[in-house]
Image (cartoon, rainbow, N blue to C red; front, side, top):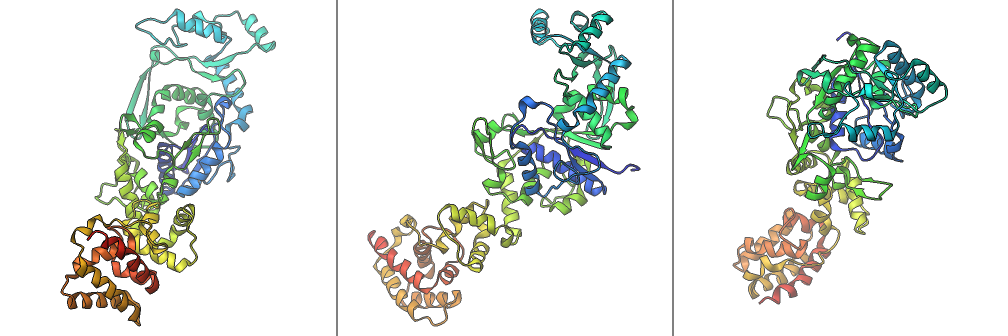
Length: 510
């Protein structure tokens, strides 16, 4: 490719960052890095009525957690700023006026009441939602229907107005999409979108084209839901800059939930996150849980997102970010929607927990313990505990349940699995075993196990029948790593204390 690759993610600061948005970032990022290009974040905040305080910083916090750091952005700077559309306001009217001069756009002075009347007047069974299009424009209050002198006077006196694109009639508007190949639109089905609003701010349609041109964007990856806007954008590129300047487009497949496009409501209904990180709406104070707080590693989150609509062509499923950069190909992005499977997402996380050094996520796991009132005093011991239980953890939050007994004696014992075979002989075994434990000079998992098995042989009891009760005594239930490793970790005094405390509970079942 002759041009330097430049891609952009252009979110609106209106709320939480949906996993579909992060996937768009990821595909942009992978493509740019693979090609030695640049990844830009541009904040599209032209709709001030939808602006939410804190949303912009939240977006950058999410990208930082994911490891998808932009080369240029409002935070990182760059040669093509400003990177907030609200700070580029003066640029857009020039291009909108140019379109009017060319005859490709017009001033529209219709009031909200005029527009409502139009919708009611032309509403029918065949056309339930009338649009401001080629059939309607000549019946409205605009510079195509009003005398030129009146238009000039209205502009000079500051009469509120917008600038609309004039969609040509009877044209087939086509482009080559990197995923969908050739896509065609009938211009008669496209309405005259507003390009410049009454407050002087551009709409998305004008701003995205102008900004992509001025920022020298070479490839634009965006969600499939924007495909319907393509004909307006193609015409704007044609009229303003020439189609040879237009970026290559790739419209990414939707991410599907249980009942269509994946939404926040799906997450609330089915109990899984749909945002990258926790988001609290400052207007409603509603909290939406994120993958980070749910206990996902960013490596796993990125990995699962990459596979939602793309595959490498190999059986391999686990990819680091560096491996994804090497393997990614836009040609292997699927055309059809990708179904989000939360169980599969957890599988990715489980695999990444197992393969990642515990020191990488220990600080985050420690927060779960702190939230339960458990203070971690010895870092080396904490890391050793995480290492022992990590194969049993699907989420980082699982480490607390799987590891708390290394720090505290279990508050309750699930004895139901063992009491049916409990008897006086086994009770006697554990009373004697406590005495033997006191005498062990070298406290290791192996020495504890040898003493355990030797005593079992002397009492003619199968060791396997004794290990489950001992596990319940130390852990509280039927889970955890090797029971003798647990005893070694918690120490001689604590092991004996837990056995002695549990014996009356077991004996009560006899």
